[in-house]
Structure formats: C-alpha cells, structure tokens
Length: 325
Image (cartoon, rainbow, N blue to C red; front, side, top):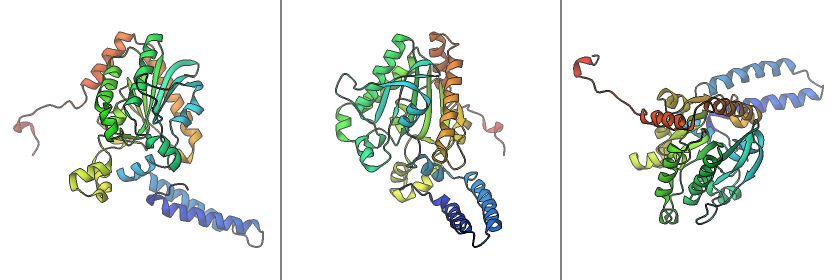
C-alpha cells in the first residue's frame, strides 16, 4: 500500500471526489463538467499551497515515502551497461549497498548507493538500507578500482544510518566508516554524490564525501534521525516531529550553510509523483557536474575537495562592541 502523508490528506480527499464525479459524468446521465473543472482548480491551488509550505517533518515523510525511487531505480533508468559487483574481499557482501560499473551518457564510472526495500520482505533483505561494515568496504574496493582505471565515481545516499547492531560493531563499524571517509577525501577521481532520500548520520557520510554534493529538493540530510534526536534530548520518541523541525535537515537549510552544492527540483508532491521527470533531472545534473570536474587534474580535485570540507563550519569571533543591540 502506498504511503499517505498527513499533509496530503486534504488533497487526496479532493482528488477522490473529482474521480467519483468523473465516473458519474461518463455515464452521460448528468453533466458534471462544470463542477469537475471547479474542483480541479481548487485541487491545483491546494496542491501548490501544501507543497510550497512543507515543514522539516513533512520533508522527512516525503524522503521516506515507500514509492520514492531507490538507488536501483536510478541505476536502471539513468545508467547503461550496469554490472553489479559483490563483496568486500574480507568477509562478504552487504545487500544494503548496491555497487558496480556502469556508463552515464557514454562515460564509464563506478556507481554505488544505499538500497532500501519497497516492501517488508525486501527491506528485511536490504536491512532497511542500513549498511554493515562490509558495505562500506565494498564501496571502498570499488573506489580504489575507479582510481586505478581513471573512472568517475557516483554515489547515491538513502539511509537512516549505519546498522547499529552488536555484530556490526564487532566487525569494526566505526573503522569502516572512518576509512571510507578518509579514502574519499584523498582519492584522485571525480566524485559526484546525490542525496536521493534520507541521509542519516555516519551511515550516509561514509559514502558521501564528494567534489559535488547534490540533493533532491525533498530529501533530508542530518547528523541523526529525528527519532534518535528526540530520544536523546527529550527521552521521548514522540517528539520526533519537533526534532525534525529543529535539526535543519532540509535541502534549503543545508544549501544555505554550504553543506550541499546544489538542490535538484522535484515534481510537485515529490519524486514518487513523477519518477521519469526526477530521473531526467538527476541524470542531467550528474552529467553536467562530471563534465565540469573532468577539466581538473587529479591533484587539483584532491586539493579542491580538501578546501571544500576544510571551510565547512567556519566561524569568526567578534568583540562585544561589534554585535548589534
């Protein structure tokens, strides 16, 4: 069953009413065309009003929508010649991260990303998109391959966070994430990262260090999930909505802080409303940024990437006299 967002309920009720009137109108017994047009105008205005005034919590719900395109959907629709590669060559394969070789507009690249399921059975197989250490190490193996053969790197971010289980910690979860971040910081290949859904904590950052970080309009990216934040601050998970609205996890806020480089527009209502349009937007953005990055030498890529992350969180101390009353 498709997810119904709280904020969408008035619109969905109106769309159902329009659908019912159309069915009656088709019988030819009653002319309802005028009423239908009036309700369609009302629905259009309501839709614009709803999606132009979304809260942080609303964005979280859209980012988690069960119909939202996943990494595999992007692989199938914007890349060609995708060949999936498995395993970290140390322990095993992690289905929470899908990775392989592909082409985008003829350009050979390494591509990987978090993979959630679209229904319960697949989510269990994919561990709800939460990687174990072998997932990060698989991505690292492919990144080294990209550097060796001069390939570009594309990563897709969509996870609530790295898997927090005891087994993952025993296998070195923190080391795997840290090593992946360190590798991405210095690898001599162009990297484009796209946040396509939920970017949660170190599980996201572990494969998100890029020369260009793009973010879909209704995706979210934060140091912790709203539920985790609410549990820590208020010891009450029911305050997740309040946490989401305070975390600054929306694309607009992150762009304002220069934590992401570009916001990619979505169809009105979210990527799940028109996946084809979303695929086209993402494909053009990735291609454009890879073309731009290809003009830099490997040494320049590494230096620019270092400076990019070095300046994040910069602040300036001021004297009291400089502050406005």
